Image (cartoon, rainbow, N blue to C red; front, side, top):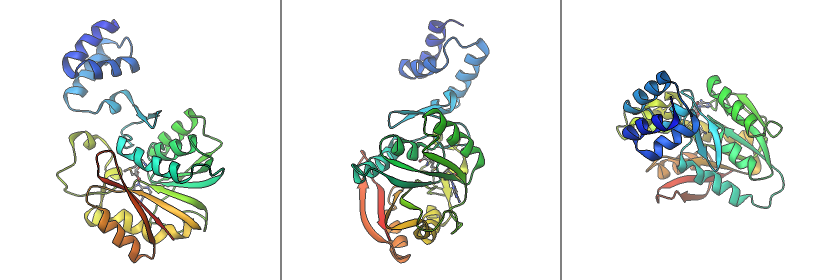
Length: 256
Ligand SMILES: C[S@@+](CC[C@H](N)C(=O)[O-])C[C@H]1O[C@@H](n2cnc3c(N)ncnc32)[C@H](O)[C@@H]1O
């Protein structure tokens, strides 16, 4: 089907802006493909899950049903690390729960960091590997299978910086928007009111961090106090918290 015909049909469903984004990724779609896309849009499937692409920190990431689509809020975490390590020529980073690899790729692309991207989901790791390769970072980032509940996940004193945006939504939380329901559950939900991943990371991550290293965590709305308590109880020192562009405390930083 001609691009302008497809654009008109898609515009009628989702407006010209979204239609343009889709057409850029799928020019001249067949009738069947266009029908499939319109059905997905009507069902509320996020555009990123339809075109399998999402922009994050100025970089394009492949995404699919096995990965969380990178979120603009997470760019705050990248910003904080890049500001703190501006001018540092070399440092080692570990991204725990890497998903598409968006956090570590954005940091490595814009700094002297090298490191490791880890996820428990092997299917997510295929996506991370694809992104690391397409961004030309294969010699700087290794992609590894692993579970943050394992204290031996990484060698002792491995990293200068640990970053993580772990699953933090409480089971049954009604605030989850419809779009997020197309992300994998393993990327979204955690036990103990959404705090289980922080508890496990607080217990184990000191092993993986150098003495002067820091951990940077994304947190959900209203989690700052609970996460601070969890990390303090596990012997970490609070460094700072940072708000996202919406004024929500989104990033917490701790050191050993
Ligand atoms: C909220 S997503 C974050 C993805 C990506 N870092 C981002 O910010 O877009 C959480 C990720 O943690 C992974 N994950 C969940 N439980 C895990 C575990 N026990 N060990 C390692 N990774 C885990 C999920 O597969 C998912 O990719």
